[in-house]
Length: 325
Image 1: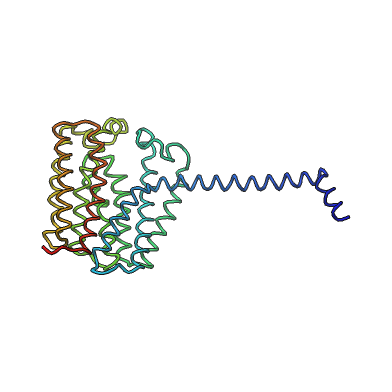
Image 2 (image 1 turned 30 degrees about the vertical axis):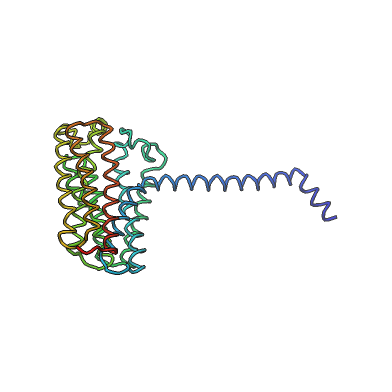
């Protein structure tokens, strides 16, 4: 009789309505979950994960170079997480400030903010939560110096560079490059609690690398920067002037990359790697000066990313497998 009643209830209009309500509720939950996942994915895009991965990579190399042995696990993991979260927050603020400019450029018009996939408030809340979590992580499980330096780096990129320098001066990349050069210093201080001369050499390498890296991009994106009203060097001073400066800063970079060997921070493995990588970068820079094409500038830009990754990888290998000079 119980079974008969159950069947009757299932087949009755009330039973059918109940099932439909239950099915509808489950469907709403599924749709809400998909919407949340999609929104979270868009917020992650604002964090520029590829850029953050390079930041964390150079910071981790700084950690390993700061000690002759292995990096303490807490400094390694907490430092990496804290630096990554704060860098992600800075990237999100950059996207928030530049959303109207991003809509005018082919390279950035498909970011979530210009397309209306997330709101400014959602981005601000995301940056606040992620950045706050990163700084708390560094303060609680790394050290105060690293936290304060990371906060200064955040301000330097998200405020000084994005809000002040980028729309005002063609030297935005040169001056603003200081914040982008900080990750290996942050990694170093995460392990040692102090800033050492060798950490500043790592800073100088990225600082010298930044102008030819970004100006190669600016050369073949000149029209987009002009439409957006951003005073990048090719827009304000012309292509030839910019190409000469790409070569000039690449020569400076090649000289700076010899400093780890000169100061005995690194040995022959690093020296051989640096000379080979510098030779290719200089070849690209010379070609940009004498036989420019947009395709060549694109290849130079892509090579510059490989260059920095390979150079810091060589520093790490040389640190643990030193070949006597």
